[in-house]
Image (tube, rainbow, N blue to C red; front, side):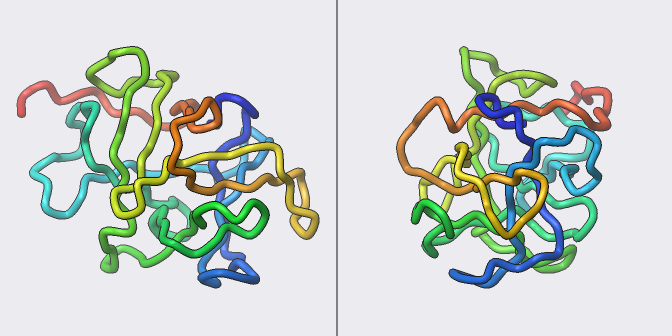
Length: 172
């Protein structure tokens, strides 16, 4: 959930009409929409296993649960603000470094926990996952733009809220 606007990170099988033309990513105001669920996965070269604690500085990937595509970014301009476009791309067997995000935990915490403030910084572009009150006219339900920005701002903070959480595996 985006801390400032309370919108959920959201995607569905609707492509952007500009930029990359890849699957769009938005902020969605409703809590109970299955298109707002993401699976946290390690990078392919990691030895991390399901249930391992995720430490600040870890490189993760977010897989959209319904479409199986990866949260992705690149240098295409985002549709509303002209920042870095954030999209969904690839699939179960198709992932690249455009899907890698570095976890930055706010407030000095070492392990990612539910409802903890975090930033996700895109490895390839250096852009922080970001949202703001700029809304799409063509999409219903008050969906707002999600993009990447290279500056650390209050609008870069996210929280893991609703979801299924596994017990932490403390033996690495």
